Amino acid sequence: MYNAAVKILYRLFLPVLSLWVLAACNTPVADHPTAAVANPVVQNQSGACVYDRARLLALDMTPFDQNPDGGWRALAQQEGCLGTAADLIRDYHAAMPEKSYLLYWHEGQVRAMNGDSVSATQLFEKSHNGTDDTFGWNLYVDATVAFMKQDRTALVKAYLALANLPVPPNAQLDQNGNSLADSWPPNMKVVENLVACFGQEYKQAYQNCKS
Image (cartoon, rainbow, N blue to C red; front, side, top):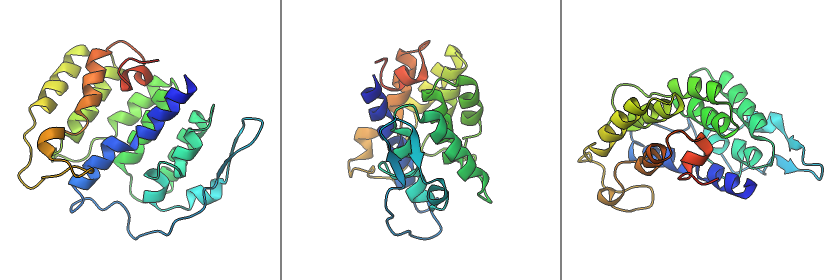
């Protein structure tokens, strides 16, 4: 079960990464590029969460949030460290002059994976991104919030709206270089899982009802 959870966490960045790529011209990820840094997260033999908090908090947004083998993700992949990773995201976010919908989202996902549904739902509700929903991000958020609140009607409404979202004329490829016609809309597979696994825990629903 732990290995399955690690795989889920590894995949958490994929849905939002596709949104970033599609909207890259309008949504900069970081103010300036950052050189690669050594991984400041180490697993000791006792299984405790061991990490260099100061170095992690000093990272720019991209290496902190989007590196699948570094930043908060490396900490979250340690067994028993989901709560610590969520707190790290919270503290990193608190130090930012401007709030990030992605950090609200990722903290919410980690807390949901750790079984804290109340806190996760509150964070998800803060994850909407403006009024322009060309790429369906807000619909994805709406579907997730509805799932967390066990509101099937709202979940199906968001699902149908996302399923019928038109492909924007200026977006041709996803992050893997595939035609958007084959992968549109972003995050649809996750929302399909939420519908199919309604009533289960978020962790199970995220990976299509698997434990």
